[in-house]
Image 1 (cartoon, rainbow, N blue to C red):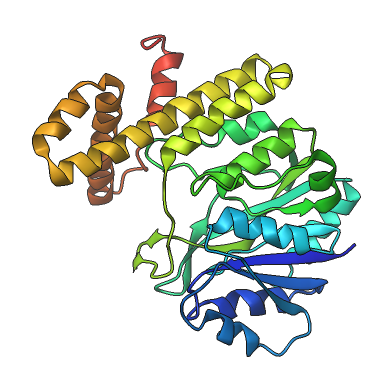
Image 2 (image 1 turned 90 degrees about the horizontal axis):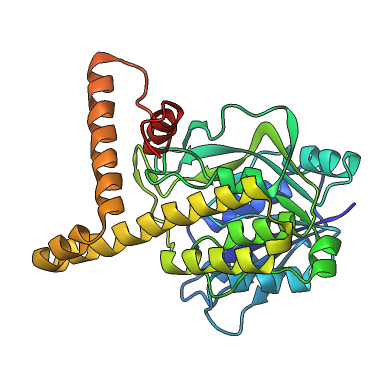
Length: 335
């Protein structure tokens, strides 16, 4: 089985060589490495063209339209049986394709993801592995995906940040592509559509993908250019719920509702942050009309205070707001 690697790029001249070479150094070589240039304005493509490999080819987007559109262009040009996603500031360990392909083919899967190494790009070292409690290889569902993407404090790793290999024939047969209007949550949305459309998916505990944290312990990554519009994430939640309503059971509906509520709070917190920087009176009015946001922000402050106390006394890590709420619910003190 063959693999097309897709790397969208935009002004990443200082780092893109690392990503491409990690794909070239795989123990199972890809069929091709498609570098999709989203109209870079620096010498990114000149750097790419210096890499002497017949596997690497550049596709230029007609205009700058963001990572979702760039990935769709790469998928359209891909010739492999599998699509492997790699961001320009990330990298792979050498055995990644070999391991994921083995799982995908033995399990007749359409979607195979590995655990993630959270990487401090400034320091050039591993922070930790993202997910602690995985089985060696477990089949996952849409419910699993939604249940792992609703933490207001971003303490729990979102499965929307996984970078699976995807069977191209499944994407084509279902007419699935990235939602190009999204600059946040576009990966999660595609994965959700695949799983809701019947994709067989596996997640393995071994971590081969080095994910460069936007804000790592040693400082903010200079290559993080994410543009967040969380209102689109909320709107797409409603689209998915309506589009796949005949495939949503009670547990999945509950998980989707929790995720929507969390991302509504995240969006409101982002709006409030903008008001706080520009107009304190408007900030006070806005927050005053959002009691759920006030409770969530209070929980965040409390959690950070507990973290500082834990660090000073070496106590176990404080639970997230989501975990605290679950504990309260289990004690029937919160409905």
